[in-house]
Length: 340
Image 1 (cartoon, rainbow, N blue to C red):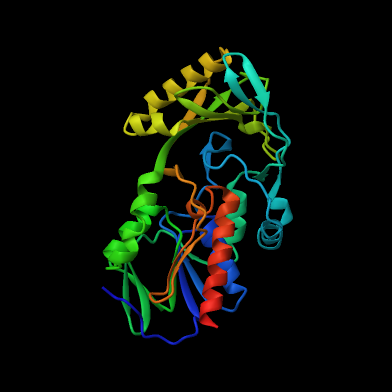
Image 2: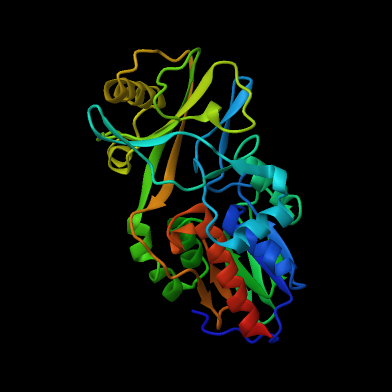
């Protein structure tokens, strides 16, 4: 087990693993301090909670449905790096169900979405960093020259003075274990137990299936969220695309259920809880294995200064999109304070 790296005090290069909001924010904030940053992403493009699914002639947001901006620094960051036209308020009708026909409005708060889809934000942010896509990092080799990243195919990149990991807790723990950072990995045992899956469905209706609200928390053991994706700004759909999120408990119990059966179950429950009788004419499912944390961690970040390993993500800061930025911002500040 490596306890402390014998490296120059100044951090000049950093590898960021993961290109969600936390990863891209970490990279851009470090770049702003003159650090050389490379972002590694296992998928074909930037990922994370701001996920959209390609559907016929359009797209549907299957990850985060909206985000808030309570931290002024988050708005400043988005406007500077993604552009003010990459996001906009979602001026919709939000409600939650307290009984079979008892609905109440959401608390009044401004909610934002990416335009014309959630991924517009991550795409814009990723254009300003050195992003290496389709690189699944499975191990970090550490020595006196720093950290070298090793892919599943044995390719190596580095060395880097520090590594920031923004993957979900389970994937982060596996990476740390594979890299012989056993004591760091053990700190993630509890967060891993708290992460829950979520089945998501995008369904197309030729006409409005339910017109009371555009976004809803429904009272159900199966469904947790339903929204009219086409009501978001910049969506110019023929008909309407609706998004359904299953509850964490139902998703866990049915994590291996075939996608078509999942779609049928969610549509039936939507009809039962809202009284809608429309049938969709197209649908696409998506399974999130690491959707959200059941805990309420407010640690913000982890910075293991002796090993020069940092962890950031929404799971460390309340679970919201804005929390991912707050986590990254706090981590970068800690790295800066410790390497000056």
